[in-house]
Length: 103
Image 1 (cartoon, rainbow, N blue to C red):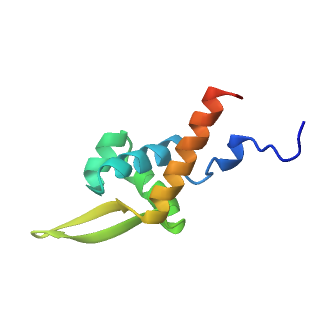
Image 2 (cartoon, rainbow, N blue to C red):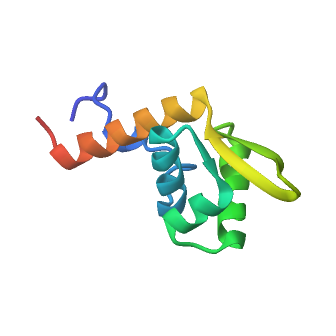
């Protein structure tokens, strides 16, 4: 085996790879700003689980979390960062390369 050949699995992003985080980032790659409750419902998880995964994505710099109010009700919005968008593109490219197999 040639030492200069690298396997696409090396491009898989460990932060994005868990299915819930992958789902969140995938949604944000298409919809740039999503309210917390809508994201929770779209991914089909509890608020606590979404909050935990948001913390990991935010710590990696992949999402921005903005808190505010609609009327008197507190709201949280999620948006993807440029870094998150780049990481998602690399991650999905790696998954596609793996699924296609060696050329």
